[in-house]
Length: 154
Image 1 (tube, rainbow, N blue to C red):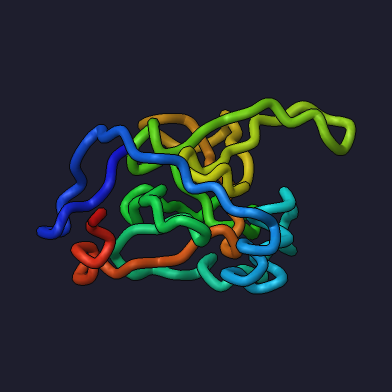
Image 2 (tube, helix red, strand yellow; image 1 turned 180 degrees about the vertical axis):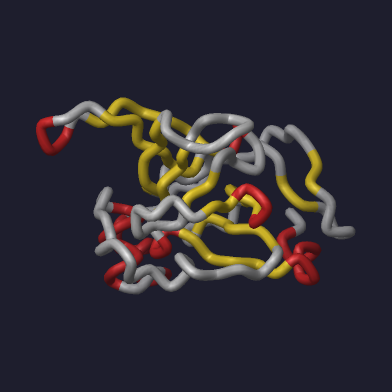
């Protein structure tokens, strides 16, 4: 995985330990809605997420374990009602799994360190990747570019 160092620079890949907690431990750390979405593969209502209209420069991190997932310069307006990104900050930070729920086949995206549910990736995004990582705001936290050093791994 790639993480930020004390100077606010993305470094790696590094071999980081997984973050594993019981449901009770996750519930103690997350709001009920964050738990429903990130730990129980839920989906927030479209056009309601707190990060949908965020235009600040920085990095979107996993709400559960703070792993950097998406940079603001990869965010775009998809019109779908969820924050959308054309690529992750590092491919190794986002894991994929086939999701056959709700009578369809999609590619689910999860945090590679804690398996937190992020959303889904679709092949209808803009250049350069052609991908649309459609992510729930409840699965993310935002860290301003001036505060990236705070994400440094100890």
